[in-house]
Amino acid sequence: MKNILVTGSRGFIGNELCKKLSNDNFNVTGTRRKNQKRSRYYDEIVIDEEEGFEGGGDKFDVIFHLAGRYLPINSSDKNDIMIRDNIHLTNQLIQFISDARTPVITTGSYFQKFHEGKTPFSEYSIYKNGAKNLLELLSQRNGNYLRYIYLYDTYGVESHRKKFIDQTINAIINNQILLASPGQQMMNITSVDDVVNGLIQSIETLQSNNLLEEYQIKSEESLTLIQIVEQVEKAFNKNLKIEWGAKPYRQQEVFKLWESAPNVPNHLYKDTLTLYIQKNLEKFNAQE
Image (tube, one colour):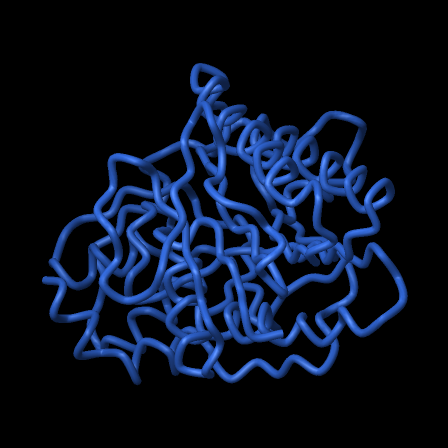
């Protein structure tokens, strides 16, 4: 399985996955929109908003489908964007491989497995489940192997997604004041290196005879926001200017984490937040 397509290759996780696959001697192809310049590092195919993917999907041994759109909780005013970049794009992928039985490894969010009551966690979780249902239908009808990997919160040097951990690192690097909630929310945090290694490790699960399997990439590091700040301060050896309680809790918060699926088999986690920051300290500080 040497020829791999990565959708969402311009994104944070997708870009790191492409670099690791290339270093491991896979033949990597990414994706780009028509208005984007070609990558200097790997081949790409164009995704047209109306016409879909160019070419055919039968030349790839595996497809990592990472393309999608995440927006914060209570983003109902952006529903059209989330439908386009999650459900519509997944449907275009299905058309792209409709004449092939190319295995698909795709990622979802632990928000999809929210189990307290019958109400979905957010609009984002609804659209991710919709895309997942489309891929499951493809698997059942066409015989494509599907591996669905639930992710929690990912961090890394190149992450600029304005999540709490990104804001925390940016504030401590630039000596800025960070306004926060009281900070008792829970997050499971995993370095992008460990996420990428877990995704590559999931290729081995395609040797199973099961068409559909679900896994999670969830490290052992589940922390409150307060504990995350403490770990960041320890790694940078400096104090963060933070005002706890300056913001209220949002309508939907996570105070108790849940399991989404079994862990990816034989995947070993190498990083903690402190260790990752310390070994990449020069790269982080270069962003000042």
